[in-house]
Amino acid sequence: MLQSSTSVPFVDLHALHAPLQEEIQQAVRQAIDRGDFILGQAVRNFESDFARACGVEHGIGVACGTDAIALGLQACGIGVGDEVIVPANTFIATIIGVLHAGATPVLVDCEADTALIDLDAVDRAITPQTKAILPVHLYGQMVSPSRLQEIAERHGVLIFEDAAQAHLARREGHTAGSVGIAAAFSFYPSKNLGAAGNGGIVVTRDENVAERLRALRNYGAPQKYVHTYRGTNSRLDSLQAAVLNVKLPHLETWNRQRNEAARTYDRLLAPLQNRGIVPLRNECDLGHVYHLYIVRVDDTAGYDRNVLARELGRVGIQTGIHYPIPCHLQPAYRSFGDGEGSFPNTETLCACILSLPMYPSLSEAQIQQVVTSIEAAVCPPLASETPA
Image (tube, rainbow, N blue to C red; front, top):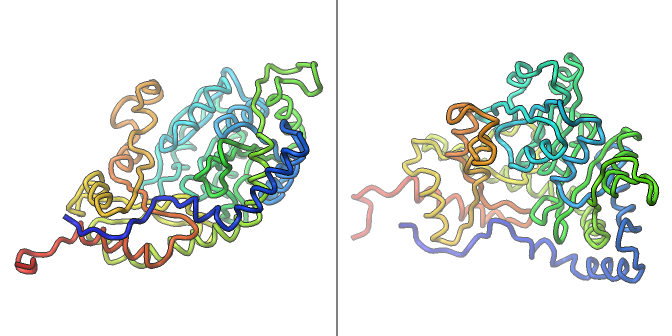
């Protein structure tokens, strides 16, 4: 068994918020004093600033990331009878968002070494009913914009990005949210840019999409009591927007710190790759914002993923699994695959990946502690080296 050590949390929101506490409290007080709790000034400010940071003209705040996908697709004209291609390797909210829009998700496999959607599989899956490709910029790494745009243009389909884990990620000169017609983001508290509760946004450069979405989130009414669309009540809360306004100016710095922490992990874990601890490949270089830092625990590690996670937990190192059961093997969504073996890369990754601690204030000493603990688990001392 590993020896005990100082704990390393999986996420440390306290360390993130502590320097901003007074500013956050002041922003919330100002929103309360204004009394514009629904679609107020704080929301308008944040929508504009976040859209600008993504390189597009419009931001429309909604209640959560799942609604951002569902309402965003509807605003793009996608609904009943339309197919939307999505990765099998994603959080279930991606699938739910497509279904809530009335469309049919068509799952394809992911790449084994990046966990991103397999664009060759996307190309093969397109049918006359395909209306959109919904790439997920997973774990903070973008899917290739140039390849996405080439496939979409050749087939005449839309790109709608799920960027819930990729706030201000970059690749090939594009920022997440600027590749397709629109993109969905989540502000769940543990995201790179997180609220103090739920929240989401759709960003787009298309004014018509933005106008429809503003109505859809507000009971389908472009003006009060005129319900042009069959909408819903899904609005970003003004108090959450106030918190996000304080945090947004720090996002670039936090993303850079995450990338630096990942590079330290890469360096320290390099000797363990031949022992089966293999980080997912970074194809975005400095543009990867590392919402999560993921390793594969291959057969040669000597431990399976679950055992390694338990061993690390015993010494106070928190880990996560994103995600342990593929979407197509979830009880409610088995109809979107053909059972086990439908998407082999996805299924293999779900069985072997482990998320290590990752947050902006993670120190090199903490990363060294994590790696040393992994090494002790996968490279136990020989019997002759064990103290008497």
